[in-house]
Image (cartoon, rainbow, N blue to C red; front, side, top):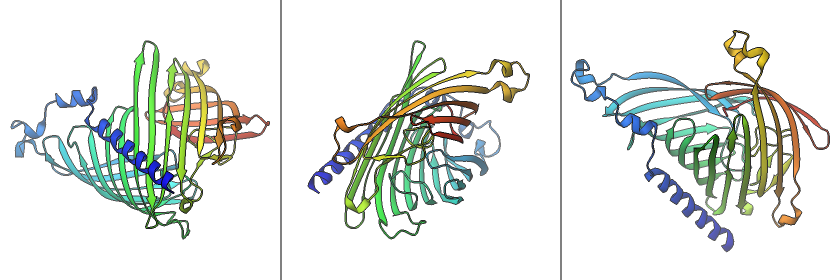
Length: 356
């Protein structure tokens, strides 16, 4: 138990340090551009009330790729100062695995301290969660988000509530965790290199069964060819049984297409995904925009997991391969894949995911 507690303390420190570093690091691109744009709220020529806008109503997509929840969020937003606003927000999404509605509601503060920052205080009843081995949560979350385009992102969240509240399980119940996600990318000549880190540390309450996990991926892309190595580890006390990476299918992290969901389980994972996409030439000249966006894809995934107590020498890699059709529209990609595993098993999938 002492070893678990020490590891948890170290994970919490590293998670907080990474979040602080991301929050204080200089961001270019959209933030710099936004800081130099004109501000209607501060322009006396902008109209009545010196340009202060009235409350505005908006609707935005609510997409949870990892847990297969898709829906929309509505917000009522009003300006509070120069480039800053406060909003009441409510959203709901359909959980495909559980075939029911998940929802959340709360308060959002935009553009503080920078134009691309967002703070949220939300209560949610959600069929997804960042905690490995759990299928839902219900409680309060305080979150901070910074985004520059589709790739440069930082998310920090503290959650306090119940795990598996909607599944009728009695344990574990109360829990608290700190969740951090970082993403960035750079162009090195014709090659685009990225880095993505997801780290979580928390405890089951009140007994104090600690848990933590981290998953790192380094995607590299060159003219439609994308190579993604993955490396992850997790650990938990006995009070959080089932806390482990669950690998299988396109929706798992990391993906292992050609296998059923949950085919591999372990507290350490190593994986590699390779995919090549190419526009379909006989459709690109059809004159229909939606067909010209359609691409063909060839892919192969390999992954291996280690259970507690196993060594690297016991690592066995499992492979899946196949091809499919890809349609990307903005940040959303719709896919239809035909995948096989190394034993010859066939596993077709149709799903949504974030764009390449």
